[in-house]
Length: 244
Image 1 (cartoon, rainbow, N blue to C red):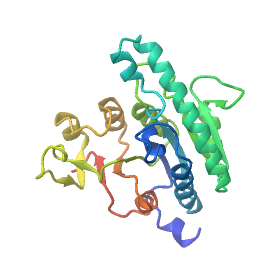
Image 2: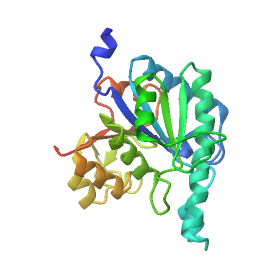
Image 3: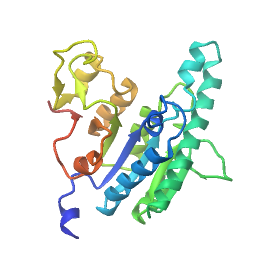
Image 4: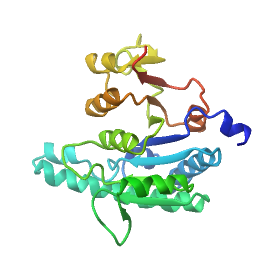
């Protein structure tokens, strides 16, 4: 074991990325190839440390099921469309990761055998043990569940050490920082406070699942080097756990 592996705080993680994070400066829509390459390079550096990486990517840059439902579409139908959007993002990220030297598998909760493997828990764990990054696509395969919930579920299924959510904000605040100038970022927060205070940032169903299974969550800004720093145990973003 090299010195970097000895310092790792998390050896197996599930990283949740928003679909909008792949759109760059394109107004939250589409896939920006330079942003995609930069994200893949960042993940390749983390992989090189010896971290086993599972990934869940949202689909909001292509289609957001909840928005479709709010505009009159059938909720289940629009959610399935959102799941397919996550498959598109997952295939794009797979290509970028492999170009960065990271062997990658896409596993989908909805079978699309021509482009990806069906999700099988034990096979996913074998892929991770063999040094592959695994991208979990199509959410949970069920409507009415967010990709946050899918990320929490997969993290528990593969026995991850933590769920990392890379987002647009530095961490979790005690109130909305866009509306309250005096808002303070929290270094740590309990699951119970997160749920009771409706702190947002992550779906409450996902947080409840993590609370019931003692899975720690880290919420931090998707900025250069942050995923690496989190995996090495640096104090980046906010930790959600049983302890404040």
